[in-house]
Length: 533
Image (tube, rainbow, N blue to C red):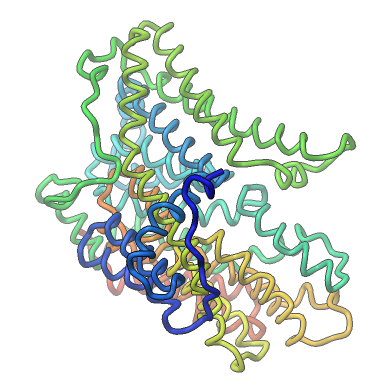
């Protein structure tokens, strides 16, 4: 249908080369220097489109506007995420207007009266929402932001906590959209090699080798408990303590606050239940959606929870949760007489409108991922590792490659399907043995599989193009580039520890000792580099 309305230009077959990294690299550099993420992404996409259309910039511009961006918007899963984001913004708009946020902050402040306890409460809330990183990010950031503002936690620190308890927690959880996705990627290589072990067993056994995710959670917890910060985050925390500014001067958060007419009228109540009940309802509906959509895709016989979640449609479940959650919140606010029905609708609309900028950036970030696929960014990066692999080097190279690809494309979920079909058979071949089933418990194999996930999350945390990093900025009300700049030193520190005290030593030292060594390194580095603001 769209091809008839907007006929696509002829796309040339692009061979992997140095040009392959030009679109994402240019977008990243421009975003860091100009602080204009939308403009930077668009220019990167335009450059990529120009490359695949024979270096014609006019055709590249037209292809970007009438084909690439349109195809991104009409993509089923991505359209659902946009609807979820808008719907969740609507819920937050009503919860803000009905006094629920204010009531939650008042109640929470009775139990977490210090800055340290407030950050710990935010971290624990993030760990509790383990089943999906998108839901985790939008819920925790929006819910805890008024609370952490009151306790003088910078928006950059809040965004870091939100980002660091989203993908790391979802990827380590034994049941989540992330874990199921990872397991599904093993099915094809296992079938081709005649492996009989359930991929779920491989995933469970690989969890201790997800060094970056494990060390990130420990690093964050130790920063909070010790009260220390360093690099740009130290400056951000000093700013809020000395000047009372939650954000740096002149910045504009992605979740731009709209004038809320319902807020002007003031809710007649400020009870915590006005927030917790709607959010709880949203989470329950999402979980029910995961279960029912999974059951619908399976046969009538009994199935495990893992199988049901694996067959579920998480994006459909998220839409159900956000839209039904919005309906519930509007009705609740009206029935409880804290807002009129008209005020509730107005609050929902204003909350949804506040997510417009966020949706624009998500669309461009996804489009950049598609362009990277067309110019073979991942293929070129992977080709650089050919001929240098040994069994013990495999986890190291896989971790670094996953991080670079994820950083450039801004997508963990786009990187994992590229690397798993390459790295898993490569591990079987390098480790040798006639029976691949015999090496499934080998530390190098488990570390190789886990390093793909950890590397992807590491790259995501460093990249201004990452959708989860963007969502963390949105939900936390932080300037996006400020979030990337303050998180980058922490992510790089954890990544280096994971590389040299984790993947470089796999096969030589038991994994539990590697985790202990990494934890000791975290404590040493934070104490050495950090200072109390």
